Length: 153
Image 1 (cartoon, one colour):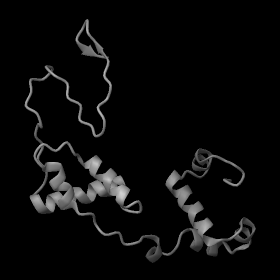
Image 2: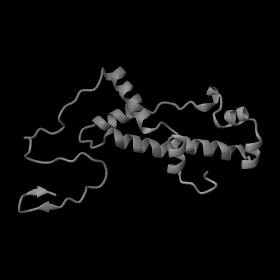
Image 3: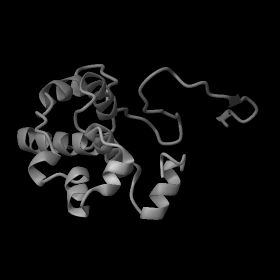
Image 4: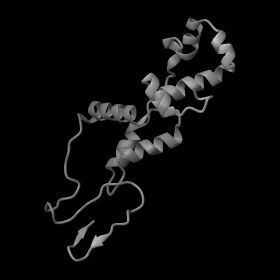
């Protein structure tokens, strides 16, 4: 379907699979070095083994990130780093590493095992409604203020 210029969304809808699965199938087909006609001539079980290799070949062992380093960065005095920023930094250094959900899961397991869990607390002591704080990573956003009302819009 991709060779006939069908979009990923059409393929995903037709076969009810996610974009990651479509890309994985295309990647494995390309890595085989076969042509589409060669693939069509193959036995169905051989095609299945090509696209969905045995369990032992599906995943590679990815070492766990240095969660102590990320935890120290997040909790250092005056730090504005959060777990999202740590994951972005991690993916830049390890493009084939863990995805965001797995990274968060393993980080939470690390915190639970090392520190006995996470505690929630207000980062800033404030009176509700008095000020607005935006928790974000990166450049400051441009906020438009309606001076008549003293509120952001």
